[in-house]
View 1: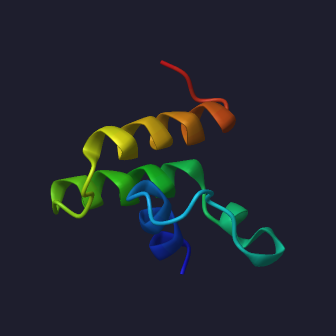
View 2 (view 1 turned 45 degrees about the horizontal axis):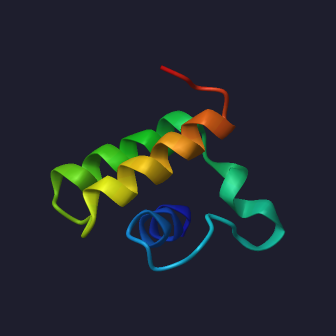
View 3 (view 1 turned 180 degrees about the vertical axis):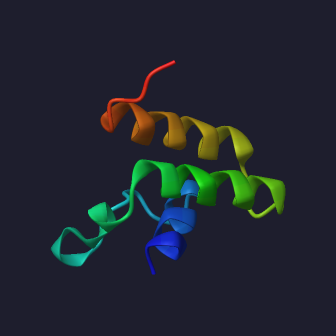
Length: 66
């Protein structure tokens, strides 16, 4: 479920990556990064620029910079 919510947010179908009762935090940032990588590789992100910006924001929130 988390992967689908993440993809919907990255694709611009929802305004935030938030799930009921904080379930969005049940996956590690490494797991979410891998979902992003695989989705990009599979061509599932209709606006790669938006998806990348949102992923960078998520990484920054998790304390990952670079």
